[in-house]
Amino acid sequence: MLLLIALAPCLFLLWYFYHRDKYEPEPKKMIIKIFLFGAVMVIPAGIIEIIIMSGLEAITSGILYIFLISFFVIAPSEELFKYFVVKHTVYKSIEFDEVMDGIVYTVSASLGFATIENIIYVLQHGIGTGIARAFLAVPGHAFFGAIMGYYIGLAKFTREKEKSLLTRGVVFAILLHGLYDFLILASTALAIFAILLIIILGFIVRKNVKKAETLSRVKYQNEQVNQPDEISNDTLS
Image 1 (tube, rainbow, N blue to C red):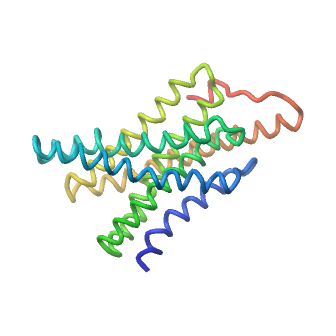
Image 2 (image 1 turned 60 degrees about the horizontal axis):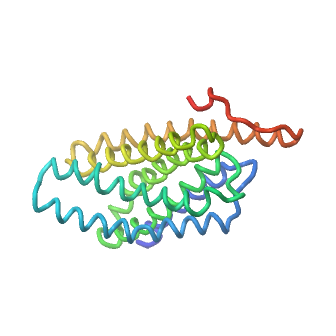
Image 3 (image 1 turned 120 degrees about the horizontal axis):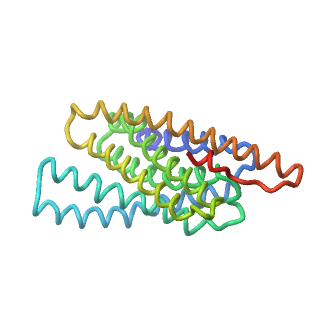
């Protein structure tokens, strides 16, 4: 039962984002591969977090400690490893052929990471934690990944702005993840703002997914008449 509670939200969100890729769906084997790589990244991220957090505990405490581990330890280590998975396994693949793929693959890596993390937390703390994480932490991982993935997708097909778009995606994901962790860890009262943050991120992701879907539709239509596809500057705004 606990395992089902841990797995269900992750698999549902993976299914949801996969099926938003309407025009040229990605190979399921590739999705599974990225998902598993994301899951494995829990190990190095966890080791780094434990080492740095142990050091910080010796020199600081309280709200400053929470701020530092949220924005400078947990968020960057986790989001950078998710980025590493996508950038070094599928980014240059022929399968990555539309902006929407950036979202799908990065969400897959993020949910792989979230799945292992969720199993650990739920087995340690029980059903209540599993239910709370199903509505907060798991969607959070997916949304951070979707936002980063949108910019990864734009970067793949906007060579003149590739580095700046990649950087923007990673920075946004780290800042949003850091803010979420800070709100959750700082105090019970601030947790309500974490809920609000997840809701807002849901709307942002929905908007980005629609933009990516529009680009995919244009690309698909252009291919039907053998025209090159381009990303206009208006789309990047």
